[in-house]
Image 1 (cartoon, rainbow, N blue to C red):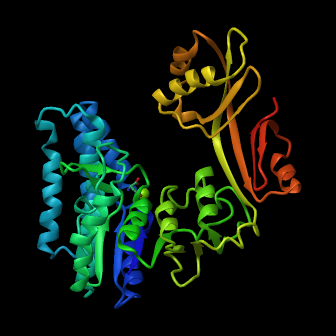
Image 2: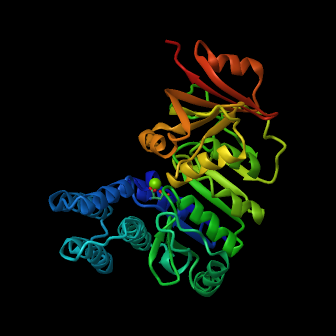
Length: 424
Ligand code: ASP
Ligand code: MG
């Protein structure tokens, strides 16, 4: 059995949905679990809907809901599957349910309500894809991920209950393959023991594919993307990018940890555990090789990879009494950061300074000041870039630094990381 994952971009309109169907159709008699995300940017639109709901802005809410509805019905029209009565009923039920939310008392628990609402994006895409596949003569069935992937109740960031998920896959997913070869399910979605819907974190559909592959002992996973595979740099910012044809699980985890956004960072771990190969391929050129991620590490160091994170802020924290940065000070600092749910991209300390690099849009500096200013001075530098180079050499580093100011640098044998700013 294979697992395929199609993201929003691969399903962005009717032509794209047809292309997905062609790709699936090229694997006849192959047992396939197909994991899909919401169509195009639907998840962002649902976030807008949730934001309107909590702003009590009924007009904006209705507007957003209408946009989502029209967008999906337009695709159904173009795919000419309007005749599928059950599809139309399913979709109408969702939109009717959502249109009534404003007439009920507001749900206080926002992360909970976010998951209940935003998860409809994947429901809609699954329903449309399954109906379209069936309309073209491909036998497909849909299985609700809310019956498969069990999480705890950390809404918007559901943590997987692996044992229960394995049992649920054995009970309800694997037996389906006695009757059909193709099962479609939602990425990004799970459910709690009480049956409430959860989501796994933005862009979490890749992770769903990894989870299901692990729980069903799949032979491999393919993530279908709009790029030829894992590249050694983001083609939006670099010319002459190269395809990484074969990298190890470890290299893939490192690259995604440092910010390569081709696959969700959590995806690789369950696959590595069971030695399940992961392919990253282009849905625009499905016959091309793409990237294979496996336990084979022998080509990892052949091509240097570049990852750049923009809009970084370097925060330097120093004890007011001039004491050393030691366990006690680090505890204070990490407590504050953890309370604020800040993710650190890089850190470094000297005797009396502790520096952390953070995405500018993910930190409230006033809040941090408030938390720490009794005992610490806080200084910061904005508009910085974090450059990570895997398998670097000195020439590459000099090239990347160019005329920029290097505020901080860290090197291991495989990875060089530096923080760059403009010289004023
Ligand atoms: N649709 C969700 C998102 O956009 C999950 C995913 O795309 O993987 O975040
Ligand atoms: Mg997406």
